[in-house]
Amino acid sequence: MNQSHVSQPPRLQSLGDVVRWVVNELGAMCPSPERLAAYLADPHDPELRDVRYHVEEAGCPICRAERDMSRQRDL
Ligand SMILES: [Zn+2]
Image 1 (tube, rainbow, N blue to C red):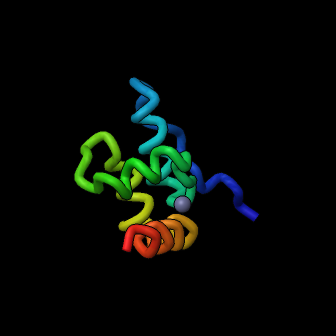
Image 2 (cartoon, protein in one colour):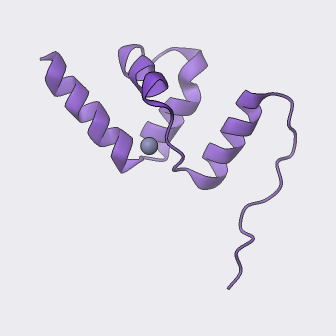
């Protein structure tokens, strides 16, 4: 089986670049609970766009469930 589906990072200029690469490659690396909560509190924060990608584009079921639960708590 070919296990080398993860390519090398093109650049490693900052931790943010590494995180974005990992999210783009794997699509399922969950953000920390603190970052997910911050994203849920302010979905438009540009600092949290990798979290938004993870939840909205990659569609992580774990984080989407967490989002749904937090919305119900807010009601
Ligand atoms: Zn997730």
